[in-house]
Image 1: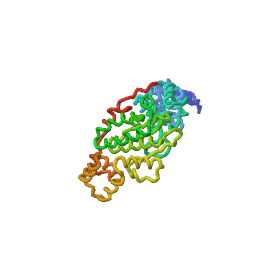
Image 2 (image 1 turned 180 degrees about the horizontal axis):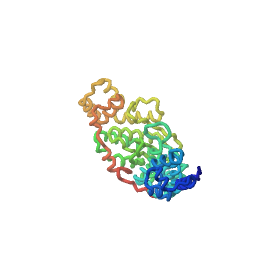
Image 3 (image 1 turned 90 degrees about the vertical axis):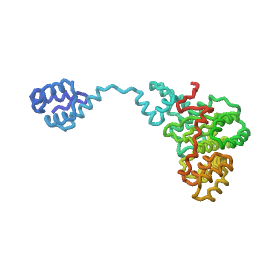
Image 4 (image 1 turned 60 degrees about the vertical axis):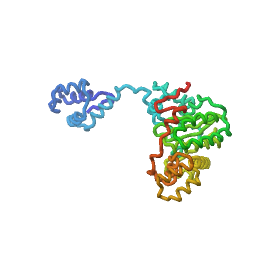
Length: 375
């Protein structure tokens, strides 16, 4: 029996076996129980070897049942065109970064592999894509390990946008004064629309960017330079309690200059399973920011007393009266109850949406809008 090179067609083997055995194509058709034209198509390479035919030929020529199917597969691969180089690059990039979503969001152009690689390097501000750095920041996210690619891409996008925003020089005392004014906004969801302009007057760039899939990030604080803080918000949870808590959390980071150059990423767990106040296993910066945010929404001592007095019997009337006494929206009280007690089913209708109000006057990227970033 002749063993042909694997890059030859199965027809080569069939013809050699026919010659060695003194068979004609008609003889083989008789043995296989098929029409002579079928054998002719196989020998002339006009038809490939099916799984059924591979077994039949194996029995006829006394070889393994998969011999012809393996031979056909090798022959087909040898004749196949080499794939577009972009296939390998797209697979390599997509395995590490949310490239397809970045293209859909308008952050990258869908182009050939060389241009795509250049765009990725430009996006992350490095000469080559294997040099993509980690961006120092302080942010509220789900995990404490290294920054996942979707979160890193989101952070770089927020930084790109922030560079295009013109604000006065940052003044610490102005931001502290602004907090007193923001406190008066807590009673009405629509007042969230005034937040971006107020922060801008303090020298804080606020960018609202829709998060990427699998990019569980709610907010971040970083600095373009020593006088240019940036607050990025994703608003992935469209609730009044989440907006004010995350915003106040990031403002606290700005006040403490967390997330400045060479800082280590500070990451929060935001799965709602533990109290925003009692998280002693968190980094010190996060404990401080969490306490400031919780106290801003509802003073901690008052919230604690309210929950202790009512135990598990917290009525809607109790919440409404408590919120009215503090001149805040009841959704802020409900959010704190959820966080402290884990009873997430209580009074959820008060967790009203605020994204529409925030987006009205904010610097926005996402939800169908692409912020124009200079190339």
